[in-house]
Length: 416
Ligand SMILES: *Cc1c(COP(=O)(O)O)cnc(C)c1O
Image (cartoon, rainbow, N blue to C red; front, side):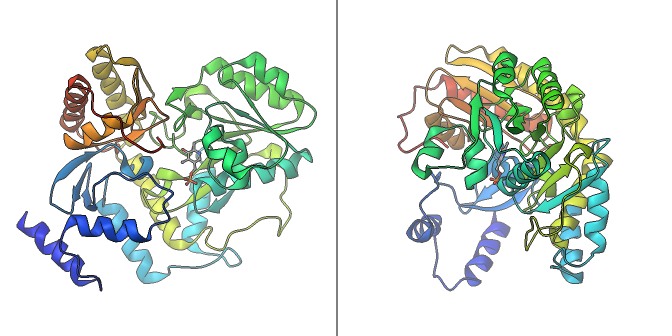
Protein backbone atom coordinates (compact mmCIF):
# COMPACT_ATOMS: atom_id res chain seq x y z
CA UNK A 1 0.00 0.00 0.00
CA UNK A 2 2.78 2.43 0.94
CA UNK A 3 4.57 1.57 -2.31
CA UNK A 4 1.40 2.29 -4.26
CA UNK A 5 1.04 5.67 -2.54
CA UNK A 6 4.55 6.52 -3.65
CA UNK A 7 3.73 5.48 -7.22
CA UNK A 8 0.60 7.57 -7.27
CA UNK A 9 2.53 10.50 -5.89
CA UNK A 10 5.04 10.06 -8.71
CA UNK A 11 2.20 10.02 -11.21
CA UNK A 12 0.87 13.21 -9.70
CA UNK A 13 4.32 14.75 -10.08
CA UNK A 14 4.18 13.99 -13.78
CA UNK A 15 1.08 16.05 -14.29
CA UNK A 16 0.54 19.77 -14.29
CA UNK A 17 -2.70 19.23 -12.45
CA UNK A 18 -2.67 19.32 -8.67
CA UNK A 19 -4.63 16.09 -8.30
CA UNK A 20 -4.80 14.79 -4.76
CA UNK A 21 -7.69 12.32 -4.73
CA UNK A 22 -9.28 9.66 -6.97
CA UNK A 23 -12.38 11.83 -7.24
CA UNK A 24 -10.31 14.60 -8.77
CA UNK A 25 -8.97 12.33 -11.53
CA UNK A 26 -12.57 11.41 -12.24
CA UNK A 27 -13.77 14.98 -12.41
CA UNK A 28 -10.77 15.97 -14.55
CA UNK A 29 -11.76 13.29 -17.08
CA UNK A 30 -15.43 14.12 -16.82
CA UNK A 31 -14.68 17.70 -17.72
CA UNK A 32 -12.82 16.86 -20.95
CA UNK A 33 -13.78 13.42 -22.22
CA UNK A 34 -15.94 13.20 -25.35
CA UNK A 35 -18.94 11.97 -23.42
CA UNK A 36 -19.55 8.90 -25.60
CA UNK A 37 -18.66 6.39 -22.87
CA UNK A 38 -20.76 5.20 -19.95
CA UNK A 39 -18.13 5.18 -17.21
CA UNK A 40 -17.93 3.32 -13.95
CA UNK A 41 -16.56 5.15 -10.92
CA UNK A 42 -13.09 3.56 -10.67
CA UNK A 43 -9.79 5.22 -11.52
CA UNK A 44 -7.58 2.33 -12.64
CA UNK A 45 -3.92 3.23 -12.21
CA UNK A 46 -1.95 -0.03 -12.26
CA UNK A 47 -2.20 -3.66 -13.29
CA UNK A 48 -0.33 -6.90 -12.72
CA UNK A 49 -1.45 -10.30 -13.95
CA UNK A 50 -5.18 -10.70 -13.37
CA UNK A 51 -5.35 -7.71 -10.98
CA UNK A 52 -5.76 -3.99 -11.36
CA UNK A 53 -5.58 -1.38 -8.61
CA UNK A 54 -7.55 1.83 -8.35
CA UNK A 55 -6.18 5.18 -7.25
CA UNK A 56 -7.31 4.52 -3.69
CA UNK A 57 -5.16 1.35 -3.61
CA UNK A 58 -8.07 -1.10 -3.87
CA UNK A 59 -7.42 -4.33 -5.81
CA UNK A 60 -9.83 -5.88 -8.32
CA UNK A 61 -9.86 -9.17 -10.23
CA UNK A 62 -10.05 -7.95 -13.81
CA UNK A 63 -12.56 -9.79 -16.00
CA UNK A 64 -12.95 -6.73 -18.21
CA UNK A 65 -9.29 -6.54 -19.32
CA UNK A 66 -9.90 -3.50 -21.53
CA UNK A 67 -12.69 -5.33 -23.42
CA UNK A 68 -10.87 -8.65 -23.40
CA UNK A 69 -7.59 -7.20 -24.61
CA UNK A 70 -5.07 -8.11 -21.87
CA UNK A 71 -4.85 -11.81 -22.81
CA UNK A 72 -1.54 -12.27 -20.96
CA UNK A 73 -2.75 -10.28 -17.95
CA UNK A 74 -1.45 -6.84 -17.14
CA UNK A 75 2.22 -5.91 -17.57
CA UNK A 76 3.35 -9.41 -18.54
CA UNK A 77 7.17 -9.33 -18.28
CA UNK A 78 7.68 -10.69 -21.81
CA UNK A 79 5.32 -8.14 -23.34
CA UNK A 80 6.87 -5.31 -21.32
CA UNK A 81 10.39 -6.35 -22.39
CA UNK A 82 9.40 -6.64 -26.06
CA UNK A 83 7.81 -3.18 -26.08
CA UNK A 84 10.73 -1.61 -24.19
CA UNK A 85 13.35 -3.14 -26.48
CA UNK A 86 11.49 -2.23 -29.65
CA UNK A 87 10.84 1.32 -28.41
CA UNK A 88 14.58 1.75 -27.99
CA UNK A 89 15.29 0.37 -31.48
CA UNK A 90 12.54 1.72 -33.75
CA UNK A 91 9.01 2.86 -32.94
CA UNK A 92 7.67 3.77 -36.34
CA UNK A 93 8.14 2.63 -39.91
CA UNK A 94 5.32 2.74 -42.45
CA UNK A 95 4.65 -0.15 -44.83
CA UNK A 96 6.17 1.83 -47.70
CA UNK A 97 9.42 0.41 -46.28
CA UNK A 98 10.32 -3.05 -45.04
CA UNK A 99 10.83 -3.85 -41.36
CA UNK A 100 12.27 -6.88 -39.56
CA UNK A 101 9.61 -7.15 -36.80
CA UNK A 102 6.76 -6.73 -39.30
CA UNK A 103 8.16 -9.40 -41.59
CA UNK A 104 8.32 -11.84 -38.66
CA UNK A 105 4.79 -11.03 -37.51
CA UNK A 106 3.29 -11.36 -40.98
CA UNK A 107 4.86 -14.81 -41.34
CA UNK A 108 3.52 -15.91 -37.94
CA UNK A 109 0.03 -14.56 -38.61
CA UNK A 110 -0.32 -16.21 -42.00
CA UNK A 111 0.79 -19.50 -40.39
CA UNK A 112 -2.11 -19.32 -37.90
CA UNK A 113 -4.47 -20.89 -40.44
CA UNK A 114 -3.47 -23.32 -43.19
CA UNK A 115 -4.15 -21.88 -46.63
CA UNK A 116 -3.93 -18.22 -45.60
CA UNK A 117 -1.67 -16.33 -47.97
CA UNK A 118 -1.27 -12.73 -46.83
CA UNK A 119 -2.07 -10.30 -44.05
CA UNK A 120 -3.11 -6.63 -43.85
CA UNK A 121 -2.07 -4.86 -40.65
CA UNK A 122 -3.97 -1.99 -39.05
CA UNK A 123 -4.66 -0.59 -35.59
CA UNK A 124 -8.06 -1.67 -34.33
CA UNK A 125 -10.94 -4.06 -34.81
CA UNK A 126 -13.16 -1.76 -36.79
CA UNK A 127 -10.31 -1.07 -39.20
CA UNK A 128 -9.77 -4.80 -39.71
CA UNK A 129 -13.46 -5.16 -40.57
CA UNK A 130 -13.36 -2.16 -42.94
CA UNK A 131 -10.39 -3.69 -44.74
CA UNK A 132 -12.00 -7.14 -44.97
CA UNK A 133 -15.22 -5.69 -46.41
CA UNK A 134 -13.30 -3.61 -48.95
CA UNK A 135 -11.22 -6.65 -49.96
CA UNK A 136 -14.40 -8.72 -50.38
CA UNK A 137 -15.94 -6.07 -52.64
CA UNK A 138 -12.71 -5.88 -54.65
CA UNK A 139 -12.44 -9.65 -54.95
CA UNK A 140 -16.02 -10.18 -56.09
CA UNK A 141 -16.94 -6.91 -57.80
CA UNK A 142 -20.20 -7.15 -55.84
CA UNK A 143 -21.64 -4.72 -53.27
CA UNK A 144 -23.69 -6.85 -50.86
CA UNK A 145 -22.80 -7.83 -47.29
CA UNK A 146 -24.86 -10.25 -45.21
CA UNK A 147 -24.36 -9.95 -41.44
CA UNK A 148 -26.12 -11.41 -38.41
CA UNK A 149 -28.58 -10.02 -35.95
CA UNK A 150 -26.90 -9.33 -32.61
CA UNK A 151 -23.56 -9.18 -34.43
CA UNK A 152 -20.99 -6.53 -33.53
CA UNK A 153 -18.23 -5.52 -35.94
CA UNK A 154 -17.22 -2.00 -34.94
CA UNK A 155 -18.23 1.63 -35.11
CA UNK A 156 -16.79 3.18 -38.28
CA UNK A 157 -19.30 3.61 -41.10
CA UNK A 158 -18.60 0.34 -42.94
CA UNK A 159 -18.22 -1.83 -39.85
CA UNK A 160 -21.21 -0.09 -38.26
CA UNK A 161 -23.26 -1.03 -41.31
CA UNK A 162 -22.50 -4.68 -40.46
CA UNK A 163 -23.20 -4.15 -36.74
CA UNK A 164 -26.73 -5.01 -35.67
CA UNK A 165 -27.72 -2.89 -32.68
CA UNK A 166 -30.17 -0.16 -33.71
CA UNK A 167 -29.01 2.18 -30.89
CA UNK A 168 -25.52 2.22 -32.44
CA UNK A 169 -26.76 2.62 -36.02
CA UNK A 170 -29.76 4.88 -36.02
CA UNK A 171 -28.11 8.22 -35.14
CA UNK A 172 -25.70 7.83 -38.08
CA UNK A 173 -27.97 6.73 -40.90
CA UNK A 174 -27.80 6.58 -43.84
CA UNK A 175 -25.10 3.94 -43.50
CA UNK A 176 -23.31 2.10 -46.32
CA UNK A 177 -25.82 0.60 -48.79
CA UNK A 178 -25.93 -3.12 -49.56
CA UNK A 179 -25.95 -4.52 -46.00
CA UNK A 180 -28.59 -6.90 -44.67
CA UNK A 181 -29.00 -8.78 -41.38
CA UNK A 182 -30.26 -12.32 -40.87
CA UNK A 183 -31.05 -14.24 -37.66
CA UNK A 184 -27.90 -15.89 -36.24
CA UNK A 185 -27.72 -19.69 -36.27
CA UNK A 186 -30.48 -19.91 -38.91
CA UNK A 187 -29.07 -21.61 -42.04
CA UNK A 188 -32.31 -21.20 -44.03
CA UNK A 189 -32.30 -17.42 -43.52
CA UNK A 190 -28.69 -17.26 -44.68
CA UNK A 191 -29.50 -19.39 -47.70
CA UNK A 192 -32.27 -16.95 -48.64
CA UNK A 193 -30.05 -13.88 -48.15
CA UNK A 194 -26.88 -14.84 -50.06
CA UNK A 195 -27.37 -14.06 -53.73
CA UNK A 196 -25.57 -13.00 -56.91
CA UNK A 197 -24.91 -9.51 -55.43
CA UNK A 198 -23.37 -10.79 -52.19
CA UNK A 199 -19.70 -9.90 -51.77
CA UNK A 200 -19.39 -11.20 -48.21
CA UNK A 201 -21.02 -12.99 -45.33
CA UNK A 202 -19.56 -11.67 -42.06
CA UNK A 203 -20.03 -13.62 -38.82
CA UNK A 204 -18.56 -13.99 -35.35
CA UNK A 205 -17.87 -17.53 -34.15
CA UNK A 206 -19.09 -16.52 -30.70
CA UNK A 207 -21.08 -13.29 -30.72
CA UNK A 208 -19.36 -11.18 -28.05
CA UNK A 209 -20.95 -7.80 -27.57
CA UNK A 210 -24.27 -9.31 -28.74
CA UNK A 211 -24.55 -11.48 -25.62
CA UNK A 212 -21.88 -14.28 -25.73
CA UNK A 213 -23.72 -16.54 -28.18
CA UNK A 214 -21.68 -19.39 -29.68
CA UNK A 215 -22.50 -20.45 -33.25
CA UNK A 216 -23.82 -23.91 -34.09
CA UNK A 217 -21.05 -25.79 -35.93
CA UNK A 218 -23.48 -26.79 -38.71
CA UNK A 219 -24.44 -23.13 -39.22
CA UNK A 220 -20.85 -22.03 -39.81
CA UNK A 221 -20.24 -24.98 -42.15
CA UNK A 222 -23.34 -24.07 -44.12
CA UNK A 223 -22.20 -20.43 -44.31
CA UNK A 224 -18.88 -21.59 -45.74
CA UNK A 225 -20.55 -23.87 -48.30
CA UNK A 226 -22.97 -21.15 -49.38
CA UNK A 227 -20.15 -18.65 -49.87
CA UNK A 228 -18.20 -21.15 -52.00
CA UNK A 229 -21.26 -22.15 -54.07
CA UNK A 230 -22.41 -18.59 -54.68
CA UNK A 231 -19.10 -16.79 -55.13
CA UNK A 232 -19.15 -14.73 -51.92
CA UNK A 233 -16.31 -14.29 -49.40
CA UNK A 234 -16.69 -15.71 -45.89
CA UNK A 235 -15.41 -13.13 -43.42
CA UNK A 236 -14.99 -14.42 -39.87
CA UNK A 237 -14.65 -11.77 -37.18
CA UNK A 238 -12.34 -13.27 -34.52
CA UNK A 239 -11.59 -9.91 -32.94
CA UNK A 240 -12.97 -10.91 -29.54
CA UNK A 241 -12.52 -14.70 -29.73
CA UNK A 242 -8.77 -14.54 -30.53
CA UNK A 243 -6.84 -16.71 -28.07
CA UNK A 244 -9.73 -17.15 -25.62
CA UNK A 245 -11.90 -20.05 -26.73
CA UNK A 246 -9.52 -22.99 -26.26
CA UNK A 247 -7.69 -22.54 -29.58
CA UNK A 248 -5.79 -19.54 -30.91
CA UNK A 249 -8.54 -19.12 -33.52
CA UNK A 250 -12.10 -20.16 -32.68
CA UNK A 251 -12.43 -21.26 -36.35
CA UNK A 252 -10.20 -24.22 -35.49
CA UNK A 253 -12.96 -25.76 -33.33
CA UNK A 254 -15.19 -25.89 -36.39
CA UNK A 255 -12.73 -26.82 -39.14
CA UNK A 256 -13.58 -23.57 -40.89
CA UNK A 257 -11.41 -22.10 -43.63
CA UNK A 258 -12.67 -18.55 -44.09
CA UNK A 259 -11.55 -16.29 -46.91
CA UNK A 260 -10.86 -13.37 -44.57
CA UNK A 261 -10.28 -13.42 -40.80
CA UNK A 262 -10.39 -10.21 -38.75
CA UNK A 263 -8.20 -9.95 -35.63
CA UNK A 264 -7.57 -7.18 -33.10
CA UNK A 265 -8.31 -6.86 -29.33
CA UNK A 266 -5.93 -9.34 -27.62
CA UNK A 267 -3.60 -9.85 -30.59
CA UNK A 268 -0.87 -7.61 -29.14
CA UNK A 269 -1.79 -8.17 -25.49
CA UNK A 270 -3.11 -4.63 -25.03
CA UNK A 271 -1.10 -2.60 -27.52
CA UNK A 272 -3.37 -1.34 -30.33
CA UNK A 273 -3.29 -3.53 -33.44
CA UNK A 274 -5.63 -5.01 -36.02
CA UNK A 275 -5.05 -7.57 -38.76
CA UNK A 276 -6.85 -9.26 -41.62
CA UNK A 277 -5.73 -12.71 -42.75
CA UNK A 278 -6.33 -13.09 -46.47
CA UNK A 279 -7.04 -16.45 -48.12
CA UNK A 280 -6.56 -17.64 -51.71
CA UNK A 281 -10.10 -16.93 -52.95
CA UNK A 282 -9.53 -13.19 -52.42
CA UNK A 283 -6.95 -13.08 -55.21
CA UNK A 284 -4.36 -10.38 -55.77
CA UNK A 285 -4.94 -6.95 -54.20
CA UNK A 286 -3.63 -4.16 -56.43
CA UNK A 287 -1.26 -1.54 -54.93
CA UNK A 288 -2.77 1.65 -53.45
CA UNK A 289 -6.32 0.32 -53.02
CA UNK A 290 -6.05 0.47 -49.23
CA UNK A 291 -3.56 1.49 -46.54
CA UNK A 292 -2.89 2.82 -43.05
CA UNK A 293 -0.26 5.19 -41.68
CA UNK A 294 0.27 3.26 -38.46
CA UNK A 295 -0.54 -0.21 -39.86
CA UNK A 296 2.33 -2.64 -39.29
CA UNK A 297 4.24 -0.28 -37.04
CA UNK A 298 7.19 -2.05 -35.37
CA UNK A 299 6.10 -1.35 -31.80
CA UNK A 300 2.73 -3.05 -32.25
CA UNK A 301 4.36 -5.85 -34.27
CA UNK A 302 6.86 -6.54 -31.47
CA UNK A 303 4.00 -6.62 -28.94
CA UNK A 304 1.99 -9.02 -31.10
CA UNK A 305 5.00 -11.31 -31.59
CA UNK A 306 5.62 -11.43 -27.83
CA UNK A 307 1.92 -12.15 -27.27
CA UNK A 308 1.73 -14.94 -29.87
CA UNK A 309 4.92 -16.57 -28.61
CA UNK A 310 3.78 -16.42 -25.00
CA UNK A 311 0.38 -17.87 -25.91
CA UNK A 312 2.17 -20.82 -27.51
CA UNK A 313 5.04 -21.24 -25.05
CA UNK A 314 2.73 -21.29 -22.02
CA UNK A 315 -0.10 -23.18 -23.83
CA UNK A 316 -2.50 -20.42 -22.82
CA UNK A 317 -5.30 -21.18 -25.33
CA UNK A 318 -5.53 -24.75 -23.95
CA UNK A 319 -5.50 -23.33 -20.43
CA UNK A 320 -8.33 -20.97 -21.41
CA UNK A 321 -10.30 -23.96 -22.70
CA UNK A 322 -9.89 -25.94 -19.47
CA UNK A 323 -10.36 -23.07 -17.02
CA UNK A 324 -13.27 -21.77 -19.06
CA UNK A 325 -15.08 -25.13 -18.97
CA UNK A 326 -14.61 -25.23 -15.19
CA UNK A 327 -15.78 -21.61 -14.78
CA UNK A 328 -18.89 -22.29 -16.90
CA UNK A 329 -19.71 -25.39 -14.87
CA UNK A 330 -19.28 -23.51 -11.55
CA UNK A 331 -21.51 -20.66 -12.74
CA UNK A 332 -24.17 -23.07 -14.06
CA UNK A 333 -24.13 -24.89 -10.72
CA UNK A 334 -25.18 -21.66 -8.97
CA UNK A 335 -28.62 -22.14 -10.57
CA UNK A 336 -30.04 -18.94 -9.09
CA UNK A 337 -33.53 -17.88 -10.12
CA UNK A 338 -32.23 -14.59 -11.56
CA UNK A 339 -30.00 -16.46 -14.05
CA UNK A 340 -31.68 -17.24 -17.37
CA UNK A 341 -28.68 -18.92 -19.00
CA UNK A 342 -24.90 -19.26 -18.70
CA UNK A 343 -23.12 -19.43 -22.08
CA UNK A 344 -19.58 -19.35 -23.38
CA UNK A 345 -16.56 -20.95 -24.95
CA UNK A 346 -13.25 -20.99 -23.07
CA UNK A 347 -12.62 -17.79 -21.14
CA UNK A 348 -15.36 -15.90 -22.95
CA UNK A 349 -18.35 -16.29 -20.67
CA UNK A 350 -21.74 -14.63 -20.35
CA UNK A 351 -24.48 -14.85 -17.74
CA UNK A 352 -27.86 -13.84 -19.10
CA UNK A 353 -30.04 -12.45 -16.32
CA UNK A 354 -33.78 -12.04 -16.05
CA UNK A 355 -33.09 -8.42 -15.12
CA UNK A 356 -30.93 -5.58 -16.42
CA UNK A 357 -27.23 -6.33 -16.02
CA UNK A 358 -25.78 -2.91 -15.32
CA UNK A 359 -26.71 -2.63 -11.62
CA UNK A 360 -25.13 -6.05 -11.05
CA UNK A 361 -21.91 -4.88 -12.68
CA UNK A 362 -21.79 -2.21 -9.98
CA UNK A 363 -22.52 -4.84 -7.32
CA UNK A 364 -19.60 -6.92 -8.66
CA UNK A 365 -17.35 -3.88 -8.66
CA UNK A 366 -18.16 -3.33 -4.98
CA UNK A 367 -17.12 -6.96 -4.38
CA UNK A 368 -13.77 -6.47 -6.15
CA UNK A 369 -14.55 -7.85 -9.63
CA UNK A 370 -14.51 -5.90 -12.90
CA UNK A 371 -16.79 -7.33 -15.60
CA UNK A 372 -18.55 -6.05 -18.73
CA UNK A 373 -22.07 -5.93 -20.09
CA UNK A 374 -22.97 -7.65 -23.39
CA UNK A 375 -26.29 -6.10 -24.26
CA UNK A 376 -28.88 -5.06 -21.68
CA UNK A 377 -29.20 -8.28 -19.66
CA UNK A 378 -25.89 -10.17 -20.01
CA UNK A 379 -22.87 -10.03 -17.67
CA UNK A 380 -19.72 -10.73 -19.67
CA UNK A 381 -16.45 -12.10 -18.29
CA UNK A 382 -13.25 -11.83 -20.35
CA UNK A 383 -10.51 -12.61 -17.80
CA UNK A 384 -6.84 -12.80 -18.77
CA UNK A 385 -5.76 -16.32 -19.77
CA UNK A 386 -3.23 -16.35 -16.91
CA UNK A 387 -5.88 -15.97 -14.20
CA UNK A 388 -5.46 -18.48 -11.34
CA UNK A 389 -8.19 -20.98 -10.43
CA UNK A 390 -8.37 -19.31 -7.00
CA UNK A 391 -9.08 -15.93 -8.56
CA UNK A 392 -11.76 -17.46 -10.81
CA UNK A 393 -13.31 -19.07 -7.73
CA UNK A 394 -13.27 -15.62 -6.09
CA UNK A 395 -15.19 -14.34 -9.14
CA UNK A 396 -17.74 -17.19 -8.83
CA UNK A 397 -18.28 -16.30 -5.14
CA UNK A 398 -18.61 -12.60 -5.96
CA UNK A 399 -21.19 -13.43 -8.66
CA UNK A 400 -23.16 -15.67 -6.27
CA UNK A 401 -23.07 -12.97 -3.64
CA UNK A 402 -23.96 -10.08 -5.98
CA UNK A 403 -26.82 -11.97 -7.63
CA UNK A 404 -28.31 -13.03 -4.29
CA UNK A 405 -28.06 -9.61 -2.68
CA UNK A 406 -31.18 -7.42 -2.69
CA UNK A 407 -31.64 -6.09 -6.25
CA UNK A 408 -29.47 -2.99 -6.73
CA UNK A 409 -31.09 0.22 -7.97
CA UNK A 410 -31.40 0.40 -11.76
CA UNK A 411 -28.48 2.34 -13.18
CA UNK A 412 -28.97 5.19 -15.56
CA UNK A 413 -27.62 5.57 -19.06
CA UNK A 414 -27.20 3.00 -21.83
CA UNK A 415 -25.84 -0.48 -21.48
CA UNK A 416 -22.87 -0.73 -23.84
C1 LIG B 1 -14.46 -5.09 -30.30
C2 LIG B 1 -14.93 -5.71 -31.56
C3 LIG B 1 -14.84 -5.04 -32.79
C4 LIG B 1 -14.35 -3.61 -32.91
O1 LIG B 1 -13.05 -3.46 -32.44
P1 LIG B 1 -12.50 -1.98 -32.09
O2 LIG B 1 -11.04 -2.21 -31.84
O3 LIG B 1 -13.24 -1.50 -30.90
O4 LIG B 1 -12.74 -1.14 -33.28
C5 LIG B 1 -15.25 -5.72 -33.92
N1 LIG B 1 -15.71 -6.98 -33.86
C6 LIG B 1 -15.80 -7.65 -32.70
C7 LIG B 1 -16.30 -9.06 -32.70
C8 LIG B 1 -15.42 -7.05 -31.50
O5 LIG B 1 -15.55 -7.70 -30.35
